Amino acid sequence: MSSAAALDRPSGQSVRVLFFGDVFARPGRVFLAENLPRLRERYAPDLVAANAENASGGLGLAPREARALLEAGVDVLTTGNHVWRQRGIGPFLDENPRVLRPANYPPTAPGSGSVVVRAAGRAPVAFLNLEGRIFMSPLDDPFRTADEHLERLAQETKVIVVDFHAEATSEKAAMGHYLDGRVGAVIGTHTHVQTADARVLARGTGFITDIGMTGVEDSIIGLDQAGIIERFIRGRPTPFRPAKGEAVAMGVVLDLDPESGRCLNIESFRHRG
Ligand SMILES: [Fe+2]
Ligand SMILES: [Fe+2]
Image (cartoon, rainbow, N blue to C red; front, side):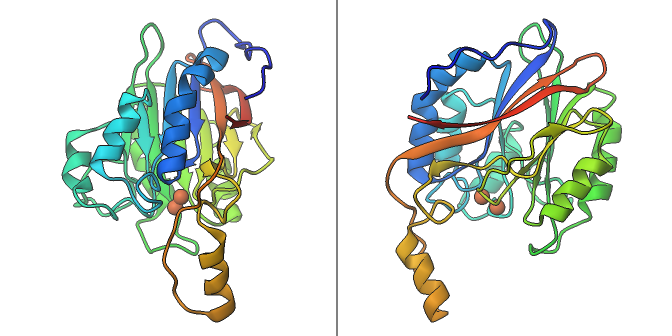
């Protein structure tokens, strides 16, 4: 980890959220748990969130690993298209409102797509998890789902952070601009590759197409290279093996204004051990 100075807050009352990209398998979980204390010291976040859809073996989130991430100090876990892959996650979501699944799954799905969390002495922050539909499974319209949730969440707080778990950059950009001025930030997850476009949009919403991954970077989006290359060159399914090696944590720091709900600053990060 570099020894750069702590990041200054734009205002005393602003709410700072540290958001980590898809935590991938054991290397991602271990890296996050071991480095979170140092990252907390550096950024002094009020709340910490992470997308955990790949936390268990690279596919899904088992209750045990979700609990460990919460115990390590992550306040809110979001997920995505792999959310249902591990046994027991349905009842776990129902019992743990800080662990989200995308809001645009059918209403009968277990769990919830949004939660409001409050850090001591700060304004409450709403987290909303949505999933894209381009090159992904068919789900309810994430744009209309966002409208429905925002109507309710806006009654509880002005500070709203959206994790839009999606593949297509166009769909992610469309969501950012669609929600511009209505939420504090729209951050993309799912591709595991951090994009260089973190910025505040015209009406005050922080946006980035993808915040990246917390896992082994010398990999193919977290997986061992050999098996994935084999899939491409032979056109046959191969075992899904998480890569081993040094991990990296990618994500963003968001500074949000509690009065207006606007993003005062969005900054992406990549930290090695
Ligand atoms: Fe992922
Ligand atoms: Fe995903």
